[in-house]
Amino acid sequence: MTIHNMAYQGQFWHWDMLLTGLDWKYFNWRQMEFWDNLNLLKTGLTFADAITAVSPRYAEEIQSQPMGCGLEGVLLQRRQDITGIINGVDYSIWSPETDPHLASNYDASNWQTGKATCKAALQRELGLTESPQTPLFGFVGRLVDQKGLDLLANVMQRWSEERDVQWAILGTGDPRYHELLANLAEQHPGKIGLSLAFSDALAHRIEAGVDMFLMPSRFEPCGLNQLYSLKYGSLPVVRETGGLADTVCDANEANIASGAANGFSFVDYEPQALEEAMSRAVMMYRDQPEAWQRLVGDAMRQDWSWETSAGKYADLYTSLAARRANSRENIGETS
Image 1 (cartoon, rainbow, N blue to C red):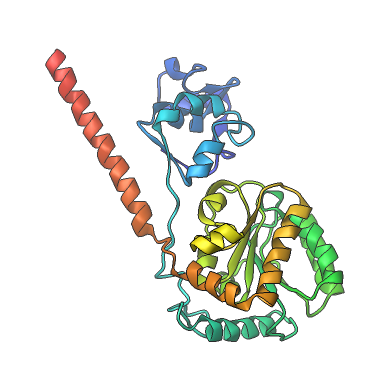
Image 2 (cartoon, helix red, strand yellow; image 1 turned 180 degrees about the horizontal axis):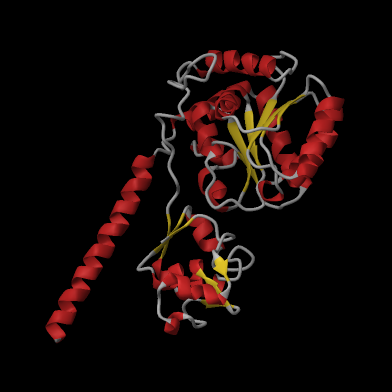
C-alpha cells in the first residue's frame, strides 16, 4: 500500500462495514475499526504486505504525532514494513528543453538566455514591470495553510513595501487568501502577478520564468513542484519537511563546496525563518552571480525522473513476491 497523504483516511459510519462485503470479525480495534468508525486507510495499513510512503522523510514523520494523524500507533507496529520512495517526474511533460508552453526552450547549457526570455515573457503576461535584474519569486499550488500561505502572506505584506522583488502566483483555495492576495496585487501593481485560477500552461511558464520557487509547506508528503523547479533552473525555497527535505539541499557553504546544494531551506515554521531563507536566495542572486549560476546548473543536471523511483518500486515488489513464494514453500514443507 502506498500512502500519499495521511490526512485523507476514508472514515465512515460503522454500519458502512456492510458495504465492504467483509466479515464483521474484522471490525475491531486492531484491524478496521477506529474510534467506532470504519477506517479504510487503517485497514490498508493493517493488511498490506508492505507499506510505502512517497518520500523517506515522510515515512519517518508519519510514525509520530502530528503527522500520523491518529494512526501513528498502527504505523509504529508496521515500521519494519515501511519504505519511503520519492515520486518521479515525467520529463516528457516537464522539461524546459521540449516544453511547448514556453517562450523559449533551454537546457543546462544555455539556461541563462532561455530563462531570461521566459522571465520577460512571464512579466509581460502577468502585468509585472519588465525588469531582468529584479528577483522574481513563484508559487503554484493550493492557497491553503498546508502549503504555507500564512507564512508567505506575512512575508509578502512586508516585502512588497520594502524590497525590490516580484511575485508570480497561481492557484485557488481559501477565500481569505484570495482576498488578501488580490488586495496586495491591487496595492502593488507591477510587483505582484496573480492568477486565481487553474492553468497548466501558466504553471509551466511560471516554473520557467521565475528565479526562485516557494514551497514553505507546513507538511509535504513528497511535493512535485520543487522537482519541476530544479529541472527548470528555478531554485526552490522550501521548508525542511517530508519530500522537500529529501530533495532540496540547502545552499550553505559546506553543501555548495561539495556540489550537493540545489536550493534554500529552513526548519522552523515561522515567517522569520522563511524570510531568512528568501533573503539568502536574493543575496546570492544579486551579489554572487557565479555561485548562483553554478547552483542553477547543478540543479538542472539532477535526475528526478521516474526511472530511479520505478526501479525502487520494482525491487520492493520483487522482494514481496519472493517472500510470498518462500512462505508458500515453507507451508508446504510443514504440511
